[in-house]
Amino acid sequence: MKMQWSLIFGLLFALLTAIFAVINVDPVKVNFMFAEVNIPLILLILGCTLIGGIIVGSYGIFRQYKLQKTVKHLSVQLAQVQAETGYTFPDPAANKAVSEDEAGTKPL
Image (tube, rainbow, N blue to C red; front, side, top):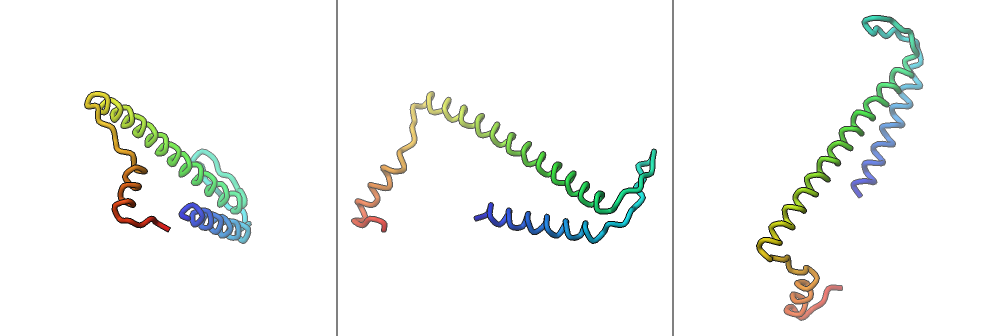
């Protein structure tokens, strides 16, 4: 559900950005410190939006990679601790079956 809301808000933002960009088509002067360029404002708005999206997407990919690396490291560490101690986690399905038998009812 969270992903659907993110998609809806993303599409809404893209629509508003496109409408704003289409309304502003006048040429503007952009100073790059070493040169000045006259470009339509629509290109400037869409270009800045694209660059912002690339930066945010790159940060998200980097963060996801870092989290996967942490999960892999912790999984290896957990396997080492389990090998050293001989401890294994109980099966959650077995615990659920036992609790259902104790209660005398089964979920709908």
